Amino acid sequence: MAVFESVADAIGKTPIVKLKRFGDLGKHKHNLWAKLEYLNPGGSVKDRIAKNMIEQAELNGKLKPGSTIIEATAGNTGIGLAMLAALKGYKLIAIVSQKVSQDKVKLLKALGAEVVITPSGKKMGDPDHFLSIARRLTKERAGWFVDQFYNPDNAQVHYDVTGPEIWEQTEGQIDAIVAGAGTGGTLSGAGRFLKEKKPSVKVILADPVGSILADLYDDEKTTPGQYVVEGIGQDFLPGNFHQDVVDLAIRVTDEQSLQAAYDLMKLEGLFGGSSSGCIAAAASSYCIGLEGSGKNVLAILPDGGRGYMSTIYDDSWIKEKFPNWKFDK
Image (cartoon, rainbow, N blue to C red; front, side, top):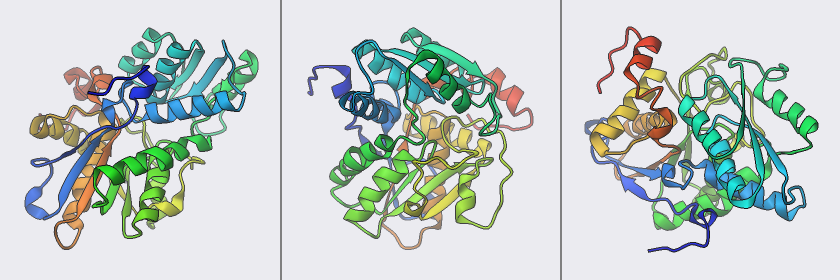
């Protein structure tokens, strides 16, 4: 068993498991796998970027002992940053929208972060948009703004670490990866590495209906809208989303995302969050439409279900948000 000097060293090397019951297996003859990024210490794939962005800022002199870290986050990057800030003695101010689950807000506070909650649904450039508030607080508090949407150390760690990890774990027998895009770092970094190793690898974007990112790959035009899936999808194009890396986008409704999250638990014993459900649903759909047989398709499940006990795993919340939908739980 691995023994580490600190929790930071335990980030990464997450397992890959085969999905044997999830999805409509009768309609495809391919192998569907899941990389369990929610088994990172902070509970999500965002631990990877939190570690790298902090370490690079330390090397570049942007972070010094006692510094304040400021970030706009859907929760998971903030949790990764809070975990590492506690380890290293930094203060964290996390700016989140009202959409973020109370479970994640409580965890951020428990880890010592100051949490600023902003209105949801604000457009980029609006003074109340969470990025606008983060930039303003950076000046007021003389802090370091992580800027995960545009910080190149985000996508770089997925190119340097996540991509090679997938290549090694699959022994190069990988034909497609499916992931969401909040900042775009996972798809852009890991996808680029895998394509360089094996040009035939396909990179598939799972995008919630209401996000504009899928519009880049088809003729549909989306009016940015609200959706319950957290952490992936956008109403703007993040700097870490490298459009050229993605081969195909699959749109997934909230209902499909939540049903897939329930099915992962019920059929595979995997307790994923709403974004994991969205990505798993897209991966299954991709497999069904993929010709031939025997291809290896990997869904990158970014976070777990414990951050959503007050939302997608709460019956009263479901009834409020989806009064006419009958989920198969």
